[in-house]
Length: 35
Image (tube, rainbow, N blue to C red; front, top):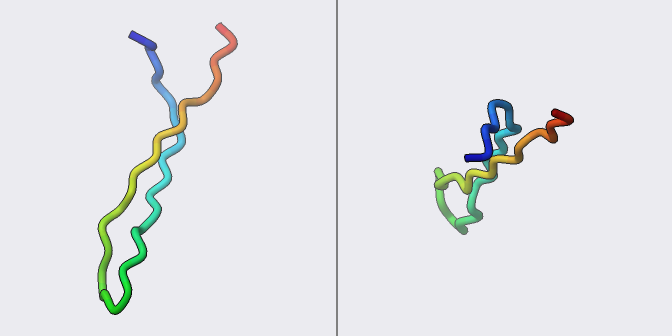
């Protein structure tokens, strides 16, 4: 496995016209490890 323990989580909403709520499109970006 990659053994990634830290990452940035970004949750961008999907654009839905006329909607009161929207599902999230999750994005996880791992931090670069110098080890």
